[in-house]
Image (cartoon, rainbow, N blue to C red; front, side, top):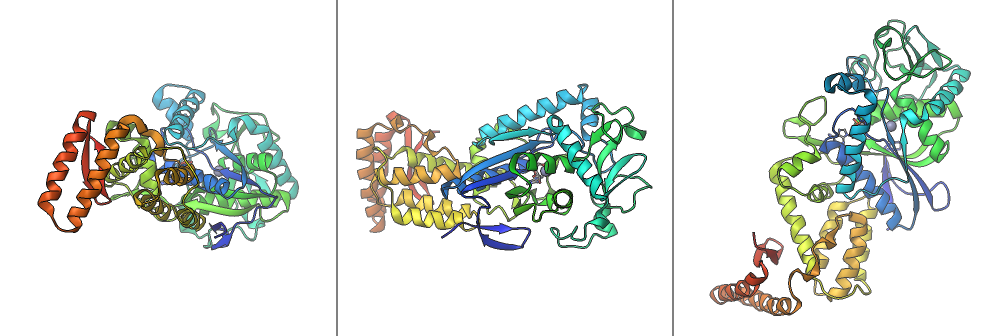
Length: 467
Ligand code: AMP
Ligand code: ZN
């Protein structure tokens, strides 16, 4: 099956066609680094990482750019999030941004997310943002008030196309980027440049510009940096679903208005949210679980990755510790099954590889892909073939399945135990449970000195480390 991806822009699954021969441009909206990113944020980046890995699996070379938003992000009350954090933590805004950028990058490593080809920090690219705003001014799609320079959404007829909903008072009021400025023409107009006046008169981050000393709005950074790195039109742009009605809508308006070229991005992809049973998880909701919270519960970040891959990225996923612990167990079993394979990888199992490809190429159906992997490992193919296919699959899933060193169970012991497991399964199939139990005791007696135990799971018996 050729790679099919769901495109928010066209509201359809489409066969993916790169704009330029086999070189794909991918831009992912990065974190706003004013506090610890939460597990929901990381769902967004595991999704983008899976997309990148699937593109590569399909033989495409990818240039991946991720930005770091370290300026211009306001909360619902129009306060700068960095300034609030800096005041609260007693640091400068620059220190705050650096601290949470480092935390974010460490977490990506723990989640085995491949770093982008290029990180772009908003404050490193202010001249590019100013240059793009100047192009917009020249096109007559902006206006200036005492407080800011705005994009005039009335000049862009298809402004609500991505969100597919009318921009009424209610949706506007719910938008975080809306600034209270009585001189604004339209409530949805968004700031391209904030002046260092009024409530921002002491703003710590400021640069000179044709509109006075000040700082850029949030949306312009992603248009300026993505076009700088990937060109005025490129293939793919990802983010969480909350970005559809505001941030990405604004990115499209500014970029297409400036260049006169449409579409700015060919395929827009959005990941659904990680939610709590009580509702939204968010930094502003104060219920944000972090990577550090996982460690406090003794859970491996890759078990969280496994948990995420069990769901489709376009489905909301409810977080619970029970679900995560079940995923951790499933993940451990998978690693153990891998660790029990012996030999050097050889030609893989074609039928499983075909099924796996069909799953991931069907709009990144990772849940199905995991099921194919499970069936592969339980199949009767020789170890060498299973190893080859499983490693190919893991290059897409990013689960580091090889982490259980094969030497943990000595080869000779493994051979005996496997023979016993097969004999026991045969006895159980014949409903000779007493004999089967006897054999299990024998197996466990063999395994105990090496620190292992036979564990019956819903996927069949596995050799597991003794707790
Ligand atoms: P932010 O740091 O707020 O700019 O968000 C970084 C990324 O996380 C964006 O792509 C958001 O859409 C995404 N995001 C925010 N909350 C969640 C959530 N609960 N589940 C999944 N993604 C989220
Ligand atoms: Zn963005």
